[in-house]
Image (cartoon, rainbow, N blue to C red; front, top):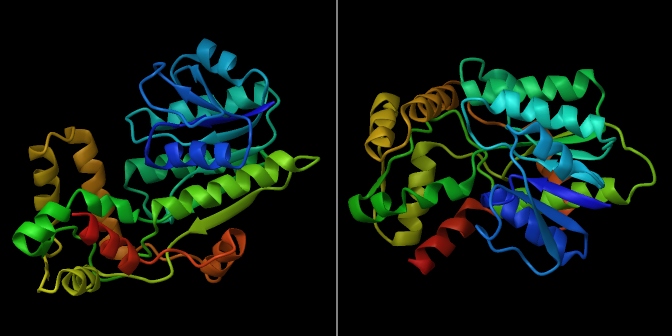
Length: 290
């Protein structure tokens, strides 16, 4: 019996596969094409697609534990619900699902509401799962580093409510810990929901200040114009539907923030057995690597 990782080639999924392989787990990465992504020693692959039920059923044969990460897509809800239904058919009773923090507080944002729909399926059908709800990835800021360094502006319109940015490596480590906890348990474990967030809240101004400190010069916050943000994404060849979805997300971040439940950070650090990575550490790494 193996652990199947759906979403295995992305930022989080690839780290989950690596982490499981490092722990000696029998892990299978679900991919659309063999050889497209390098896998660590000890990891296998299976070709399947979330829109192809026959291939999905084949991929889940002999699987004990499932990690489900669905990338942003117009039919994300359908894909995720199909995956969970096929998992039920296959008798899989150990699931870790990657959702998003405050999914219920972003009702107008398609991919947040989509993940909240999947959460409700898990809860109402009492599926034995861990729902991980990560905040904004620190790694999102890799794409804007040239703008920060070249123009002295932090351009993400994250506002002033507060954003508990989290390192993707910590998200993956939490996912690995939960997958192994469920996989090694004698019986199916109860439903758990965890906010996966960093140890400090950031605003646009305070994030810019972190870059100022690391670069040794003033970095200004670019402001809260989500329309300009959407236009910039479109100019960078992001599909229009995705650019609009992300602009709606930024508007909600400005309105309600991304703030974890009380005690969430302490729970995460107990699972990890170490402190969470900080945004200051992440930025210092990025500056050093540039």
